[in-house]
Image (cartoon, rainbow, N blue to C red; front, side, top):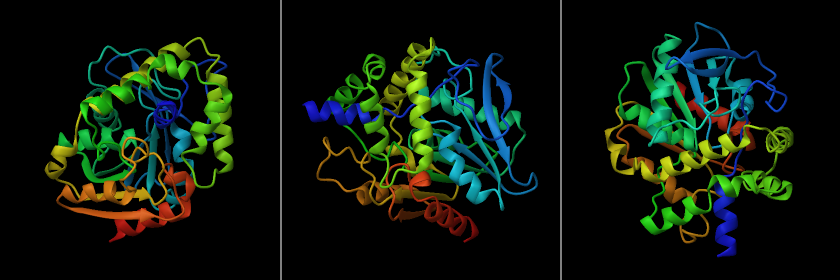
Length: 310
């Protein structure tokens, strides 16, 4: 059980920060903001040629805009790259949102964000939890959606009620708030085959965030994100996705599948669940873990360009 507790907290323990104060992360790109639902500010960056095909990038649980730095650097020569901080993350508005289903809430937020920027024929790219959010969004069939890219998406792997309860228990706000620096570092390390220098910058952001007065609110947002992933199954609806879809997983993803609950399952098996999608291409990225877009950015960016070109 000790190992299960450790791995379950690590699975959902990537991190984020918010609010305009000394604890907020800084970005190397110019950040813009737009207001949705009257009172939620969404932070985003917009890089690349404005007349190029648009890719909107959605980070995973505990992620933020920095997760997409290597992707933006590799794709902005051919694409307009827009990466956002979901509500409760990065520099976007943070508070415990009064929503029962955070996957639906994030999907509605994403839809409102895209419409506010008046984007069309969008290539929607989601990582991990952001992949599940992107699936929920795609199932609503918004007119602006052109193609879907799912990077190590949550929602393909399924859990029994007992397994889900166990994961939720050990992914609570209280558990997140109790993490030591060693646990924070371990949680990052488990995402990579080879940790890039950017990971240390993200670790320092996370350590700093632990001291922020708003960290308790963030921890609650993260807890609700976990519950949302577990309680909003998309597995049975994959055959209803109507746009061309590309699924990418790192060959050495240690988080999907869960190595303690589903020890006999391989990442390739989870990836092949994507075959339920009518128009899909699946690719495994070598020398990459769960954070495949950061772990092997050259391989990830090359695969994305090939998929979109073909």
